[in-house]
Amino acid sequence: MMDTANRNNLVIPQLGQDQINLLERLSNACAISGDETEVRAIVLEAITPVADTIQVDAMGNILAVRKAKSSPALKVMLTAHMDEVGFMITQDEENGFFHIFHAIVAKA
Image (cartoon, rainbow, N blue to C red; front, side, top):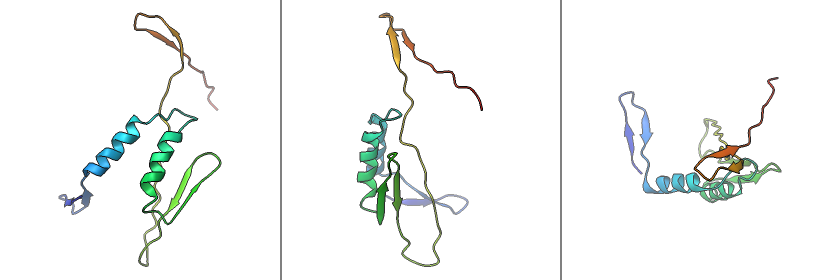
């Protein structure tokens, strides 16, 4: 993977085939809200070689730490969600149309 500099002298990493393959695996994984098991396994596989510590909490969140190699070190937090949007089909019209369940959520 090569880096390039833009006109603001910021280094922009270029995506290599490994990153493209990871994005494809993540995109194709089933991860409906409440069952992110497949995505969690892919993420854990990807971060294990570079993380110093990894924890998975009771809710399934992954907490990983990579310690700095020098001091003073910049502290960075990356956060993301593992689930995807999903719909519950309640009826198949058999002509290409589906009825989907929708919940009405009251605003606080």
